[in-house]
Amino acid sequence: MRILLFGIAKDIAGAPVITAEGITSVAALRTWLYTKYPSLEQLRSLMIAVNKVYANDEDVLQPGDEIAVIPPVSGG
Image (cartoon, rainbow, N blue to C red; front, side, top):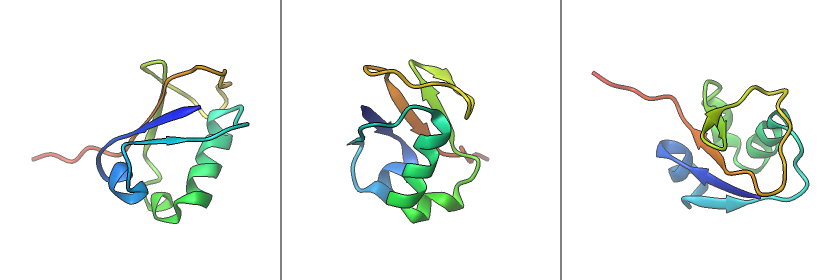
């Protein structure tokens, strides 16, 4: 699957797009991300969107889904 990264998540991974295989849920994706990129674990409030809709950890991922990792947004 193709995973789009934004903001600091993109900076931590060093790329705007990464790929992963065999991940079947949003919870499993979070675990994979935190294992591969330990610094992401500091961003516990990062959101995952699946097909442009914010997803819950229980949501199932399908081949071909568009996944986006969206870090917390700061503003002023």
